[in-house]
Image 1 (tube, rainbow, N blue to C red):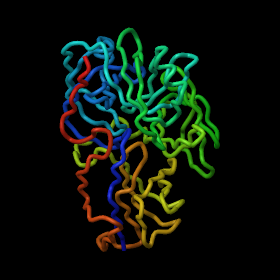
Image 2 (cartoon, rainbow, N blue to C red; image 1 turned 180 degrees about the vertical axis):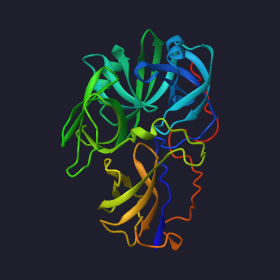
Image 3 (cartoon, rainbow, N blue to C red; image 1 turned 135 degrees about the vertical axis):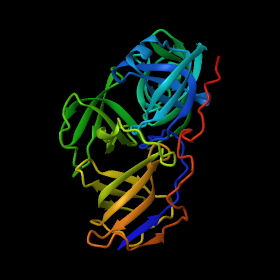
Image 4 (cartoon, one colour; image 1 turned 90 degrees about the vertical axis):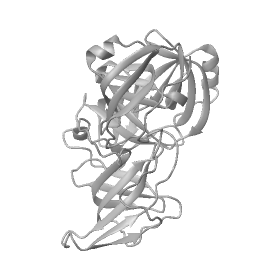
Length: 351
């Protein structure tokens, strides 16, 4: 027998990591960063939300910071977008950018931030540097006003609007051990991520691999691994418009607490931890159970929306649903995080 547990999605705010994709949307905004290693541009939309758009090398080389662009693009399963067509319609000297602080380096005059699925460097002027020295810490959600010229955006002012408990990191793996991972991010700095005891890292993972991580941010500003993105999925496009912010995993429950559940995938990849909405209980679920889990990146953390408890020897056609706090079906039309709905994304309105 297969049981299906449903829980409502948590509408938190910050950065989202779509795992499957909505096809054919128009994304318009201002180029605030370029990532030649991934042939990608980071575009700030109206209001400051960011998107990472994959381009050809020639297209990327032709773009300049501040370019106003409009792209017809398709979500990729790593949370970035692949541009089909791209139009440049002018230039802006500044933009607003919503991001999460990875590290403040006031002595070097810069911030390392995560925005739109990319870790990037923002230079800081003296006034913004004083603001950063007074309190920017890892996990702070900020809105930065950035001047756009040269090779990097420069913050003329930053405002902290909240704090997140988890964030996405992407970079080059430089050190690997059973207890820690070290990444080179934004070709500018190193970040160390603790690996929880008992975590099974992906087979074949090696130094100098490009990796994408979801990490928890501790009170002291350190990072702990939550999940490693599926590298095989990064090049897969999906036309299912109802699944644009989801992560699905099948495996055994390895930890179950009052506020979270952890599942170790059968593939041997790193366990995935999803939080539960306050007051949610999972009846009949215990450590060691085989489950199919679906979570959304609502905010910077993963939030459980569906859990199917499976009996490996049961008839797949025989099942019933148990409602754990919600009456949502398979189609979850909510907007889970960071402007990731299925309409068009408007450009940044800063001049």
